[in-house]
Amino acid sequence: MTYLLTATVTPSKHSFSREPGRETAMAKDILGEAGLHFDELNKLRVLDPEVTQQTIELKEECKDFVDKIAQFQKIVGGLIELVDQLAKEAENEKMKAIGARNLLKSIAKQREAQQQQLQALIAEKRMQLERYRVEYEALCKVEAEQNEFIDQFIFQK
Image (tube, rainbow, N blue to C red; front, top):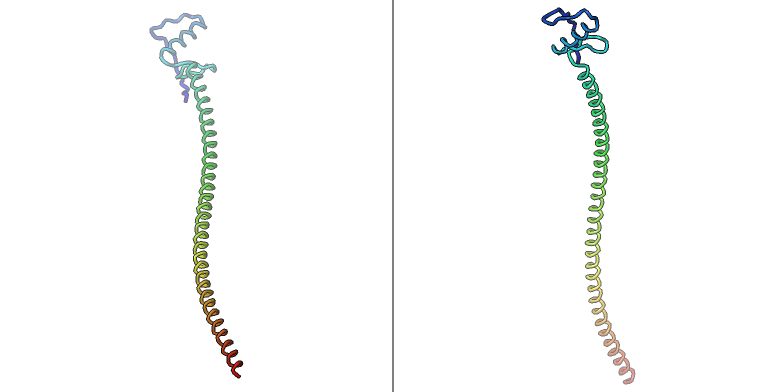
């Protein structure tokens, strides 16, 4: 921020000559010692023109820096959004994999239980087959005895 000051230069302990350019230069020197300077439009300024130019350059550099920081923040924001999205997708895939693994475990347990049931059924059927075989042998023996009895009865007549 620069301030426009108006000042009246009065003769003081400094002596001036009547050369027009020399008076202006001496006035500028006296004002310069007091911290006041003239700009390119011959307006009185508090800051030295060199400092003012450096301030303007610094202001432009700061604006460029702020613009670059804003662009960087925008890029980083986009990157963060992308990483968050990828993290959510990874979490979803992880949950799907856990679900699939649990389903496979469940299916394996169901098959194991079904296998045990079928083995129990096979054992039961084998026992039933053994009972039927023993019963068949017993019936065959009874049939043979009855056939022998019939044959003896027929031969006795």
